Structure formats: C-alpha cells, structure tokens
Length: 189
Image (cartoon, rainbow, N blue to C red; front, side, top):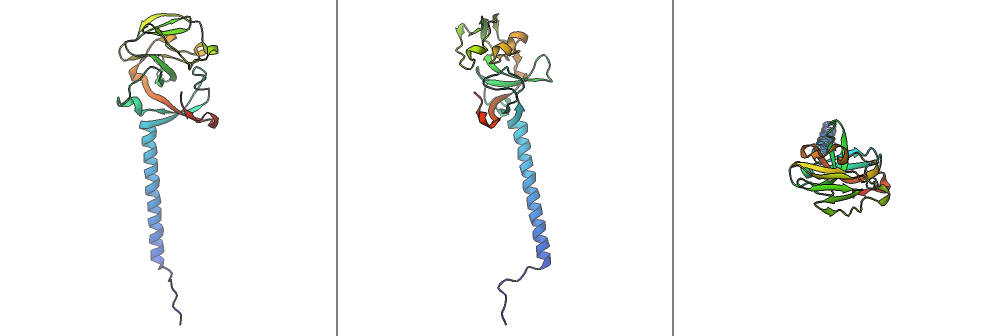
C-alpha cells in the first residue's frame, strides 16, 4: 500500500486559512488608505490648474501635486520665486496659484512691465517676452507676514498688482510636480 506524500488539509484548517487571508488583506487595505489620507491631508495634494495666468510654467487644465508640508511647520520658508497656492484674499473660497515676487520687507515696483525688488530689476527667465505687459505700479513695501505675487503670463494675470499682497496664513502649499498630461510630467519650474 502506497502512502500519499501530502494529505489534504482538514476542512477547518482551510476555513481558518481563508479567514486569516481576509483579515490580512483588510489590514493591508486599511493601512494603505490611512497612509493615503495622511499624505493627501498633510503632505501632497493633487490640484487642477484653471486658467492661463501661469503660462508657460503651468497650463490650463494641467494636474499638479502641491506640497502642503513645506510651509506648514516652518521647515521651509516661502522664498522669492516659489510658485505658491493660496486662498484668494478677496474671496477665500477660491484658490489661486502665483509666483512669489516680494517677501516681507521687500520694496516692489513695476515700471512698464519691468519688476524691481529693492531697487534691482529682476531677471525673470520664466516670463517669455510675449507674456510681458506694460503695466506700471508705484513702489510698495511688502508688509510683515505678507507676500507680493504675480502670474507668469503678465498680460492675463489677476495678481498683487490688482488686489495687493497675500497674507502668510492664506498660503497653504507650494507647487511641486506636474503629473498630467504625461508629456509635461516633471517638477514645476
């Protein structure tokens, strides 16, 4: 008589194995959902760009991730040149995305489209010649805890030239990464 090398497991063992697998799967799924929620709430958030004010760096209907962690805990300071996302001071139910031009204490002046900060004309490689305008503003000293922001497409941007500076408390993220469309995949300039 030949003895089989493997005996089938008893039925109770099979039920227990399926239960362990289901519990393990639910545990892994719960952990994944928890990590995704933490990342979206505190670190990175996907947003859709609406409008042309940040062209060519960001285009209408483009999808980007914003880094919400960068400024939240003071790990990174908001710097001149950062592309930030903020609640619009005129209507905090709306979000805007613009480039920081002036930080607290800076003197900002625009003369026929040329932006000067603290008496020095900025070299703005991110603004193509065809996106410049001829707007002039009087010199403004950026108040404490506020920022002067401009869109890169100056001739189609509603920004600090029109409505003033943005309070620090309204800025909630830094544009970090373009993920859609795929041909524009990469870091935000």
